[in-house]
Length: 334
Image (cartoon, rainbow, N blue to C red; front, side):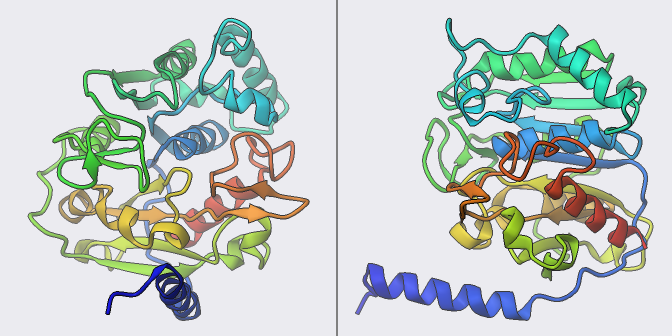
């Protein structure tokens, strides 16, 4: 007999609780501490940009699918939802010059790395032709932000994708915008962005050869990852060639409603990064965000913090989630 909605939910919760209990410490893999790259989709795209700008001395480039400019939301959920996702006449996207001035000020105050590191860094950006969740002008605004710092920018706009992670062969119809927000467009966004950020790469493996493991995120969040809307469990992928060190790291941030607590391992297995990692000496880190409904942290869709729900410094090196992911990178490099 097929399980009904209640029993299916119970099975998922039980399995997830078991996974949490089984999570191991994040291992020291002697990874290359320099030349880290990051990418993400939607809120994960915004988070990738925040990581890049905050730590541009060690993060060499960012890929953003349906993401917008740094500090776009100005710690306002209203601005995030309207100006920075669906801008209009009365809720325009913040001007590039104003965002640059604010970013420069953060750099001078040493709340982020010197913006001079952004010059020559790489940014790969994507806007789907059927994305009605994040308008094209938002992604164009991110392009303009990076151009203002003389980064090397590639903007892809020729795919009819809806709002989601764009893949070669996984997910729903290309123009869909529906959970789990993975769309099959016969286009390998993960491969395209990795090649743009890292340069020429070997073709991906025919099938995954490395290991995908869970790890405990709590130590990187002052012992309480849910308090900053991060899951207790994250993931990392290690190809056989990287078991003994000296590999580069790529960090991938899922989008809203795409965390493992909501869709299991679908994103970390189907987003498209792991087979490229196998043949190109990459460790892939998949931090996990979590829904949170507390009076102190309100994040009902499990998004990464790009509007300030963890505090006003969310976009700087002091931001709780940025600190957590940076600590994970430091651990991988030990």
